[in-house]
Image (cartoon, rainbow, N blue to C red; front, side, top):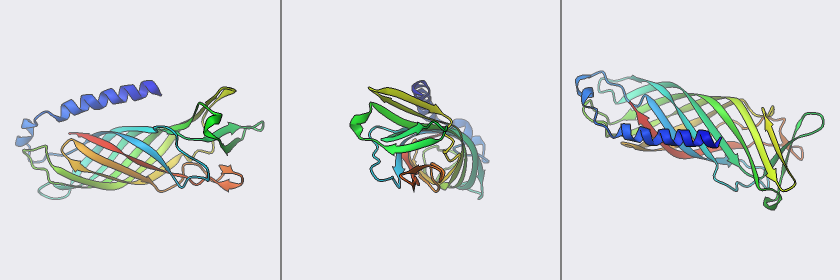
Length: 230
């Protein structure tokens, strides 16, 4: 996971260099399209937390992908975007995920002093759907934008990792993980810097995941930065 984070972070800085280049060739194309490639980094928050759950570390997420920009007006300032992307997310917190003798996963809340590291993470194929408004022109790449929409996701890999002085636990393929994720998104900003927010509209885990017979109905909230390439 760390190597993936380093690779994607490096790609972000490479992207920023490309964004700083002048798009002089765009002036001859009146049928231009905007923001077809994206890359972003977010801080992952947990909403609707079970009693006692706390986040005790910096839970990072990264995403990147392609969006087909389809302008709806002659000025090309309003558009629909449909895309395909990839995301990876980690959630550092104090909920222990453990497998019992029957092969079922169990969940419990720990005291912070009971472990050295505890997190769960996922890898997701994403489908962003956006309504796009911007102040772009054919000559300039510096403009205001507000993109709102939905992001659908399929979790193709999930894992948990626990480390303590008494031992370590690691599981791949958490069967109680909700493989289909979806949420509302907004990206807004000017030029290179854009604030990105995501609010999960369904739960991270299925209703089979419980703590003391209470369903874990947590969702995800993501806040960060998003960058665009033509």
